[in-house]
Amino acid sequence: IAGITQAPTSQILAAGRRMTLRCTQDMRHNAMYWYRQDLGLGLRLIHYSNTAGTTGKGEVPDGYSVSRANTDDFPLTLASAVPSQTSVYFCASSATWDRGTTEAFFGQGTRLTVV
Amino acid sequence: EDQVTQSPEALRLQEGESSSLNCSYTVSGLRGLFWYRQDPGKGPEFLFTLYSAGEEKEKERLKATLTKKESFLHITAPKPEDSATYLCAVQASPTDSWGKLQFGAGTQVVVTP
Image 1 (tube, chains in turn blue, brown):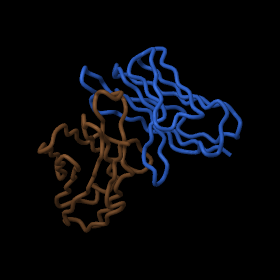
Image 2 (cartoon, chains in turn purple, orange):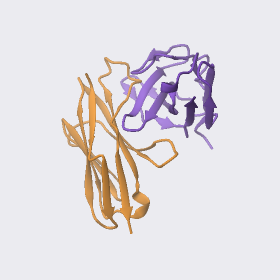
Image 3 (spheres, one colour):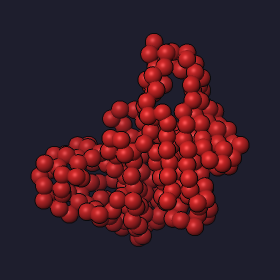
Image 4 (tube, one colour):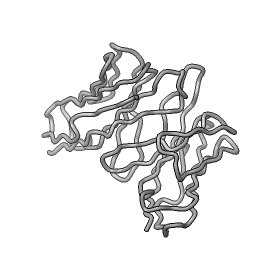
């Protein structure tokens, strides 16, 4: 089934540890995104990539890094996890055209708890 | 600064009791407004895109409308399976990076039999 695959589905992580959340899409979408979702705050954009080889910062980028080596993969790395990074993380992708993007398709999320 | 505000935060409906959800936005230039549905423990699922004031889209019991300052999601004769959190998101002018979506906090809808 075409779509977005995130791994792991959940993780408990000790503070200070490094962690990479994986995201792969098979829809050949140009644009990919990482959001975090916290109760009462909704979805907030962490980082995005409009095309392979480029990335940009979203609303809450501090403490996170991304790379986009190819079209399909967009990993999110927490270099040194802190408890405030406890959240549900969603990866998404969308097609792009010269005047904007189409709707975004989301993965099932990674529930991360930093203790 | 771009802002998206959804109301109410939560809505409890009897089966068959129609209602509307509101999404008000302030952006420098609206490129598109998106509605998503999110079930517990799952990622958001796309429902509609609206691009210009006056536009309407329908899908089963849901109808989305757009004005220059807000969007409404009308739920007609809801069923229990319509229970979910409904999210609104806006994409600002293409002069901003068109990868960015600004989401509202969502409206949690519960439909009881």
